[in-house]
Length: 531
Image (cartoon, rainbow, N blue to C red; front, side):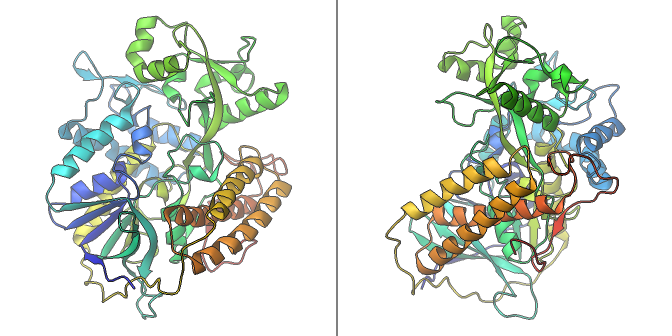
């Protein structure tokens, strides 16, 4: 038995832009705990290169940004959620500037770049490392702010709910987390919990995401009874650096926005054959075009060439990409960059409203782990970081005006009847198998048969992992694998439910868009192939 416990006003799981923004908004009025399963800077936010979309330029408009988002979302973006985010984006940029984020300037004004799918220059950035600049600033602020307590190397195990405790009132009372320093599961109680745990890119073999992106928030919310929506829409970034020694290094959308051309090995440009917008088409179209050309010609990669731009221009706009490629022997001022698509962003997630509320009282979800309705069937470039900030503020405002009673006493985590695992190889083997068949069967292009095969494998893996979870002490690897298998099942079930091709979901069996479409929402009580 473990009697270690902590009490706070708000628990925030995740230390990316969404979680840290919410913590800073709440710190003046609430005692806040921020839990993160590795170090503070190890989430996906710090990896974001391109920037943050906001209407700031003369001649641009909210309507234009809304329209661009709805077009990219392929008919599934929620208009109200989209306008809510777009209209609050400029004030979010202002908030970051007041905190001291060093955005790139030109003649004393914010330098705005353009990315695929946008009809105007509206991307605020810090050279080509926007996420890292924002994250560094927020981490420094959080560390200096009273009322915020940080718990690094704490892995979320599960939420504590009234239903699980046999109470008539089902709401969230807190969570259990594995403290890696002591190897013990700790109890955290609070009236309010915010999941800001990021996406699930690690469910795929190739991803631009960090190792932390294992779908933890989506999985625990699903197990706690929350709906999830649009899990079939996984965005594959078209351009991840292809090199045996480069792990998950993203080549930002802005390279194409500033004139980068996609080429076959013989130098032939191919994007104009796939879409009139060529390299500036939305990501799903570019990723499928690259996938098509690679399969057609038997290629390991294609090439992205920006070398026709002046050397000074490249060094000014893409210093980090230039430096990283140069380490690997690629001089992007003179050579094209070898690239492949890779899983990049989870457009679906925990179903929330415009205050970040989930189906479970006392539980909010924000950032990539949430489904707000903004992204629809495909996320428009640079709309993710601004979504984090807008909904962090909205959730904080909702929590400030929502008084919830203190949670009841919570039983400590009981691991008295389990033992230490004697064969960790089971976890590593299952982890590898899951990511490989998800890549092969549930990737950029899908078929009914591939989805059936994936569903069958997931059912077998879930059974094995549940047995492991029931009999052995939990570890971070086991918890992450358990969550990844849960999320993989949700992706497959959602994909099986969509009998059309739209946005990021492309099926050879249903290649056309349906006339009538709606989001795919799964409820834990629903029957299904993987229920």
